Length: 344
Image 1 (cartoon, one colour):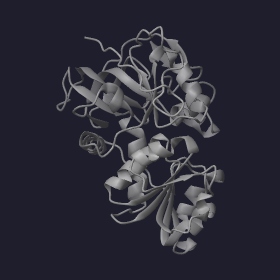
Image 2 (cartoon, rainbow, N blue to C red; image 1 turned 180 degrees about the vertical axis):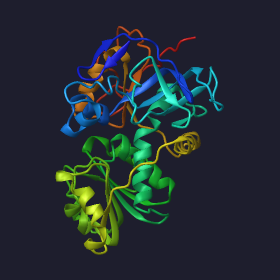
Image 3 (cartoon, helix red, strand yellow; image 1 turned 60 degrees about the vertical axis):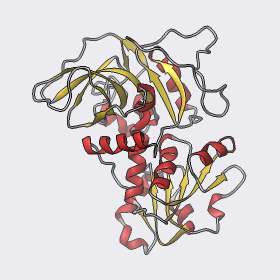
Image 4 (cartoon, rainbow, N blue to C red; image 1 turned 120 degrees about the vertical axis):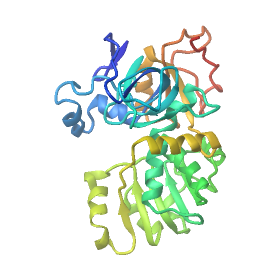
């Protein structure tokens, strides 16, 4: 079954055939993230120029993150063979919300990290690679002071962990229900944005990372040191972050950067090493079977997602005592979900 993008409905289709330099992967786990929801809903309207003006004809199957098993390879593939377990990020092509997808050997693809399950590895790419891009774009080094706004999303929760791995001092801003979670990720200071104006902080920062794109340079400028950097995960109101980044030299010492993330096998290998070392582990909010992916989209669109929402492929029978909306690892759930059986 392949979930079609525009209405989150399912349709059948032929199993893809890997072309030269491609692998056919049997997907065992994927995710639903903000990008998937934005592409499905074509919001902002700009997405329609990439997916189709009326219907998502150019990208009928969503899903960028995946983990699974190689079942076939195309001509010229030398690094992988049938039976290999892999994970990766299929940006630009998507297609991971399916039982099978084709990926390029040269893409953001690596062997499944040692010690991780499919469900643990699948959410290990998108948030982390955006977070790494922001950290590198800001020029963060050991000893730097960094504030992360939106520390409980896929990007923010990865950023906190990766900043600590880089030796930075981290202030993390989040909601009241997740303060302990964010402390557990390694944040040196945690701020509840509902009770405290984080911009009133007297500490000055080498970088402010807006991991949810809900603040602005104007609001955060006073938090920055004289040559501090503001980096956002979104273009901002009226695309201002792109414009301010281009006008960097005119802004004086404090400036905006809008780095583009790196893609490719080297990035995937770096993420694999971080996952294996324990320097980064994706936060997982909920698990859904593939046939409940519509519910997963609805949940992500509430804005209450903490970390990542994982989709298990193929759909597994739901236990009688497990509610349809899935079990939560985050605040408000009833503990970790039960282990899901895998195919033999």
